[in-house]
Length: 452
Image 1 (cartoon, rainbow, N blue to C red):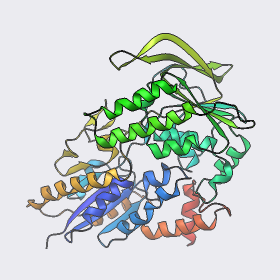
Image 2: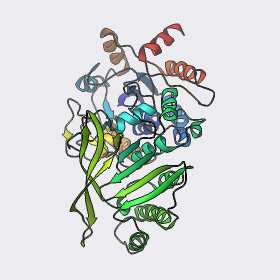
Image 3: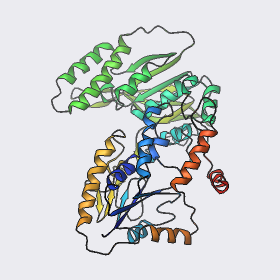
Image 4: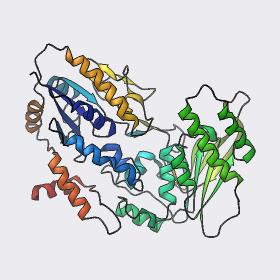
């Protein structure tokens, strides 16, 4: 029996769903390469810490890593420790599942002000990512502007507004928890350039945010009154073009906003405020005396043809901190054609080149939930297996060649057994009201493993 080898780069959902499909093949061996000593990618560092139900999918993913035909190789940065060209020489096929790790920018004035952060930086901080250990400059009683109406924006707003006691049982870092207690936000403004029907968040996440204890919610801008929202809800019932799933999501969101618009607007003493602002297009971050003072917006409205357009009016919203949540891109990788407009590896239904494939966000962009990746990854691995089935060339070196090359270059790698030691130590060092305290210092991880 000819045994083929496949290198899967990345260890997030798309990559692990690819392993789920590939591990069924007796004549395949898979090496899963991850930059960090820790697996699970987006689940570990992207899902908010108070959503442990979502993070529990790590248990399923661990089973894929424990398969006899799959090997976890942490600590390997493709493009630094080994080139893609070298990887393709060593393996019969390569699958890229590296996600989208870099936030998009607006390209407007003031984005370099220290109090203006991107979502990858802020989410990385509260999820204890080793590359994002700097604490945000939150001010007690201050106001944060969150730019975007997607699920990431919802996560950021919820983390800022949730009662710190509600993070019990989560994996929120001690550092993040202490800062959120010391610097509670007086209010959060969620500003989007279009309207309520265009909000990209999912309804359960939206409703969770809108119903946080101790948070007063109000709507501003276009689509902020009950009459407009009722009209938009009715429009969804007439939509025969959009998919039923998307119509249900939009209608659910609109009904959630409608409940806010129809509810009492009386101010509740000693509560924090959440403002959903529709039709607010950011044009500049305003700096005064070296600090963020406001975000300037162009006010927009929905035109007769349904398209959003500027009204000519501008507005400044005073704030102390801002987080942009407008999507992610995949960084270019030498040897891979790149679609700069979309921020993904150029591909056709996942195929980049002969025996070179992409799964997940690096191939389709940052869309869909975790489960979306399963169907896509399986389908693309079926196509890859079909491509390999007719191969007549000799099998490549695979793991043997990789280990030899990395050893020659002095690269420290991490196995699944190493991860088990790390995870046990994280759980043991957790505060009483947390489930783990993640390592952020890789030198500490090495010391732990050297003494294990």
